[in-house]
Image 1: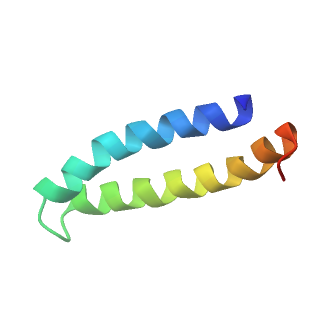
Image 2: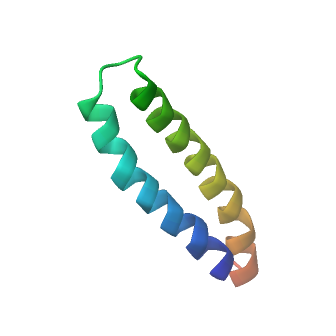
Length: 60
């Protein structure tokens, strides 16, 4: 679970910061693109950390 908690923390922070940036910025602006890229990267890190975390606790 330790392997999974840090990416989860960063994913929650990225969601909290990126969603208002996506809603408040016009599509195609620098803020909108940066928010979209950060959500994609954070989702990828989250998914990559999920496998070893589930394997460590015996669910996978």
